[in-house]
Image 1: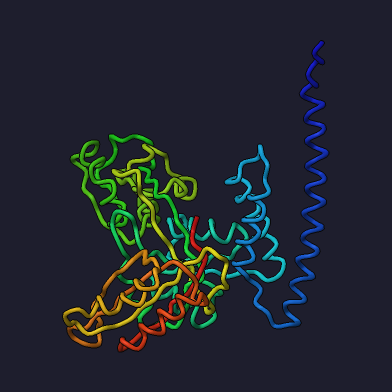
Image 2: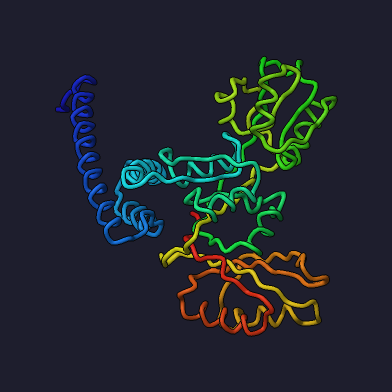
Length: 359
């Protein structure tokens, strides 16, 4: 004979008891974090260790038997570690602002809600803040799967000594927002040029008479829409509550496979995690077979190059810099040997950083 199911109230009482245990455990963990922070300060060690966070995620997801899903587990521990880090030392992060942009979302995804986020007007300001110690880290966009690379970010790495500490992938979901919630009020649609390009077909089919207007960011577009009922913004859904806007339509991007990759920049490269990527920038003269010679050290060691991008070297005519992403850490023997061989063939080479691959 089957037993009667426990009443909902009884089950909720058990959940309340578990929640209290979780709360007590979180505070016990926080006390240990504070002690670790004191020890790091005494030993003059870095407060933030991304490789340690990756190890925690990996260990917990491997040992998770469910039914709590791994993706949610990572979100929960992202915030636990973010709050814990703020107890050791508040982390200041400069990013290409303003608030509610996709770069801001990348900051939150990587550092959690307890980071101190400082919006900057352009990519150069983000680099400058980190270089001069006004921020511990910076977050900048580097490429989109549809629109390609952000050339200004690449150019900054040629002259900067900063390192890439991590990468963050954000799925770009575009939303049409306005003040009234009525699509008939729209005369002008504003956004950054990339989101406008990424939603071109939807806008043409649904707002054929609207004027498309480029602005510096999706957040600026949202602010403009909040001040003028004839303007709509193409932005992230996160901008809606921040600027008191109504959601007219979600997912207006023309291509569902739309991701933007962001880089976390700082003054030190990360330690090896076992699932890493290394980025390089190097310069060669434009001559027959030059690029083949540069890539040969990697090919003969069977190292996978995941990206190659070229930019003109602004200080010399007809010379180019190449940006390369490859699988592996700079401390791996094959990677280290390949880079050493390549350096002998280049007029300029710098390792931009080794960092954990984004999942």
